[in-house]
Length: 52
Image (cartoon, rainbow, N blue to C red; front, side, top):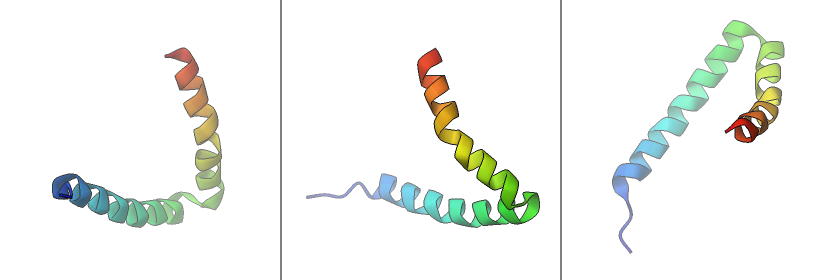
């Protein structure tokens, strides 16, 4: 089985950047804002799906 190396490397890079950027943004904005954003993501996703 041949692995899709291009897409795998893009995914790995994205996940690595996400971790660093997420923790630095939490440090800059605060834990309370981070929790609100993460907690509201499922509700906003459901609302967007309903609208579209």
